[in-house]
Structures are given as structure tokens and as C-alpha cells.
Length: 231
Image (cartoon, rainbow, N blue to C red; front, side, top):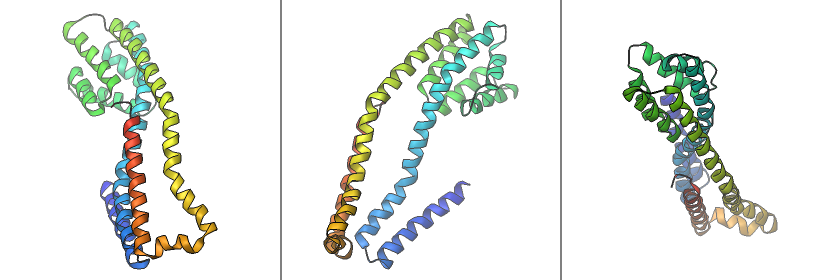
């Protein structure tokens, strides 16, 4: 699948360049458009990774609570993970099933947890695995450790959701400001079609158009970096 997607990605960049540069004669805009197509997969993956991380974070809270109840009922940690994995929704279920599969394959449970921690690189899951590893190495009641982890994860979830709510209005403003130049250009076209057409038919107009695209792109990246919760 990945080679096929990479092939279509290259075809899309080539098609955009040929269409804008040769077909429409907009050489400056062609280079800017090719760059946007080039970075589009990275931006898309970044959005999808953030969405998946938030989903894993929210699912982990209930999963740890269910795991604590399972161990309190007399199940071992490995049995509890297997039992909870059957009732956990995706995508966390896949990670739990993988831990169980590795454990059944002969790998120590601690190594399976470490591998999952390194693979996910999620703060909540790192806290979860670290506490379990300490309990497995030094002994102690797993149930008590899981209950403390559950309370910590709930508090972290509450704080992160509050931060997301506080920055949501800022993100909406960024989207509106990013879309404003395109909307303004469309409205201005109805008022002065001949003047607006100069942006696309003259080299100077195309340079100005590219300059605006660069400013908007840089402003959106900068604003998103400011609004990131992990900076």
C-alpha cells in the first residue's frame, strides 16, 4: 500500500507542476503548489497522529480502571490485559492484543510493555507501563498501583481537555484567517474581474500571489506551533 501511495504522491506533484507551469503558464504559482502538495501528506499524518493520540488517551483511562477491577477479581496482570482487550475499542484494543500475543509467544510481559511504550510514545501509556514495571520488578499489589494510575490518568485527561477547550477558539480563528485571503480574492473577482485576473495572467501578479501564499502558510504553521499543548 505504501509504495502505491508514494507513487500517486509523485504523480500528483508532477501533474500539478505540468498543469500550472505548462498548461496555464503560471510558473511561480506552480512551484508553490508543488511544495504544498509535497508537505500535504506530512500535515495529514500529523493531524491523524494527534487525533489517534487523543483517542488513545481517552480510552486508556477506562481501560486502566477495568484492568484494576480484573486484577481485584483474582486475575493475573497478563490475564487481566487479555480480558480487558476484548472489551476495549480500537485503536487501543490492537495495542493490548499485541501485548498479549507477544506474551503468549514467549516474550516476558515486561518486555512486551516496554515495546508498546516505545511504539506509542504516549505520556499516559508511559506512566501506565512505568508503574506496572516497578510493581513487577519490586513486587507489591498490582491492584493498588493500577488504581493510583487510573486516578492520575483521569486528572491528566481533565487538564488536557481543559487546555484543548481553552485553545479551541484560537484554532478557529487561525482557520478563519487562513481562509480569508481566498474568500477576499473570490469576492474581489466579482467587483473587478479584469484587475483580479492580473494576479493570474502576469508574472508580477503571480509573484504577489505566491508571496501571499507563503505568508499565510508561515502564519498558520507559526500559530499552530504556539497553540500546541506539548510545547
